[in-house]
Amino acid sequence: MIKGLGIDIAEISRVKQIYGRHPRFLEKILNTDEIEVFNSLNTEKAKMTYLTGRFSVKEAFTKAMGTGLVGIGFHDLSVLNYPSGQPFIKTELFKGNIHVSISDTDELVITEVILEEEEK
Image 1 (cartoon, rainbow, N blue to C red):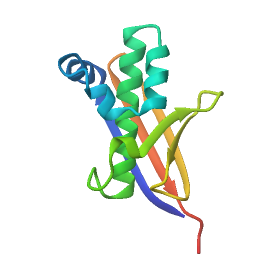
Image 2: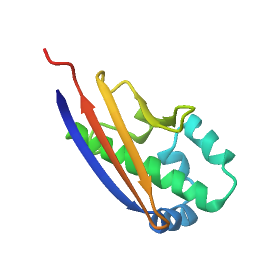
Image 3: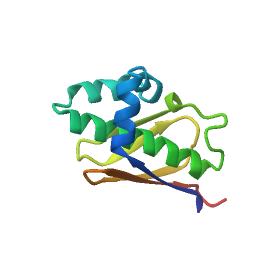
């Protein structure tokens, strides 16, 4: 049974601009595991797309939970990838299945999070 659905869209240039003005933005949004991946990326474009994607997924998750950022911090979620490249969310905030999709163009990142619980 679907518990929640969240969708977010973010402009890569806007995130890049914020990061350029406030380098600590990276540490505010990403946790240690995510920062390790960020630092391993070879180009600024790849890094900004990654940062924008993680920011957007975390926003979409809060929308799916129906809370927004009230009571949920960016570090409460880890958005990582399986070896296949498929993204997944690691969190203690939701015990059911979490489905996540990240898509991007040169300018935008769009994400979708579906929260699914077993029927009782």
